[in-house]
Image (tube, rainbow, N blue to C red):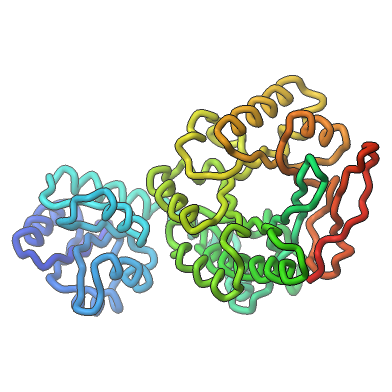
Length: 406
């Protein structure tokens, strides 16, 4: 066997298909072919593969259920699922379960070749990122893994205000790392590493649980309808069984679904648009709210908004900052607010720091605002750390109303 060849595991109980795939792919790769899921599971406990081409089923587990199970056994492998199921719904379910690609039977061998090449490119990119993260700062990776195990994190909350009334209507949950040596670290210091290593999935799940529990406490204190916004990473959508995590969290915290808003970046939504539209649509059917975060910094296409199952867009703070001084930024803010409202979407302006910015956004009838003018991110306790902004009839700005108590 050549050490330079990628290793492929082919699993299919149809002898003819398995043999054809093995003979064809062995011309370029080091291939192993098996006819049962049981044998595949046993082999993966001792050997590693770059790509797994799978029609795996077992007596107690369907092919779709096997995909996340195989990923746990071989987290660095890329799975291509093959199946006789030819519906787009089944293909989407396969991707959602963790498969990188999906091939229907019967298939053309050129299609298989192209899929394997894509899978290998994807796997190499992921491994390169992981190597850079581990190799350049192996200590940081170990510390982050320890932080996940020990829950060395805290959630800060930044208020979101209804711009017309001045009432606080929600808060965005923002994670911080309580590093035992370096002190409190901001997301910019560790989120990229968490994304590259996959640790963003357990971190994101923990933040979701803490935020929902806090929102429930606020509701019990009499602030009904108070909504908490939680950031969701691409990794959570693709690999984290996010729907099951959300359902379990809402049940455990007894929080109503419409009091949870998921925030996704514009760029991440467009990377796997078709599959993620299906996932987001299912979230909205549950009653969750969906927002595009940092709008205007990614693809910057207003037209695709009508095709996304979302409730609001968060206008990036870079545009809000210049809205009262730069005519181009002002025009962009006006365009986003107008189009979003025409599409029956809400607009949340980030980074509001001055009264002039607030007045401009009120003039445009922007729906919600967030920024240092209303309050910096702070722990939910003590409540004095973050305050509610309210605009009085005489346009006198005051900081007087505290967040609901914990």
